[in-house]
Length: 296
Image (cartoon, rainbow, N blue to C red; front, side, top):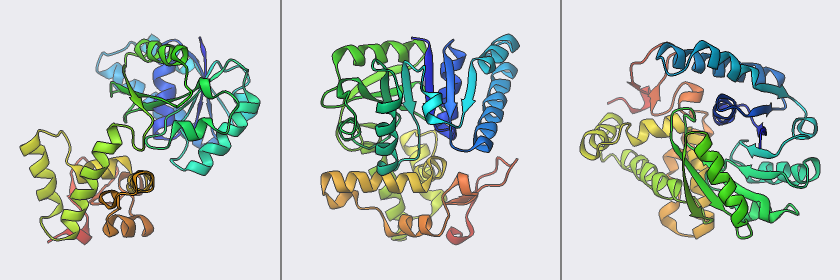
């Protein structure tokens, strides 16, 4: 298997394209907007430059990686030669279902269809195709070039052969694949999102401030990043979407999103991507500054 298509050129999509291309795969990155694809190539190039500066790769590897990536704004054309498609679009169930309906028509019969979804049922995604045995979850962690884990999620009908192949490919990428079953949130987000939500509830109820909550978790629990900073990094809109999937899937009130989180998303304060969440983010600055709304 050498021909890979990646759908989506955002933070996850360009990271997935980067690691496949760096490990010798021919990658077509697909997005509906050319400007988004141009920005993604710039991001990949900048990340490769950092790897060169740290002597993790050579300049030759960087150039070969970039040469392994082509872009396309047409889904049909972009997946025509694909042996594996990795969908990394926004965490929206209707969007993903529509993409997989199209992929089932546009790809070769033997092509494996993978989703980078962080919470949505692989079985449900597979149900809109005629190849349920070849639909699987490949949940990469962010930032993709750095993080080692890939959650491999088997749908109800995913075959053993496809699961083994995705395990093997993940290892070729230098990742550590872990198999999990298809239940809301899988493992990573079933455990992580309630912790983030409870942290937001603690802030909402006045138990402690932003910095205090993050400091307790960093120094007391040895987390490299506090849960509120991590929520900003993931994107508060993404956190909200995942919590809603958990809440709907299990029907348990413990997964109900905190009203503060809902209000922040509605107001457009989404974290790093919008420049403000629980902290303020200024381009070029590494200082962590609490957002004005949460200053004491």
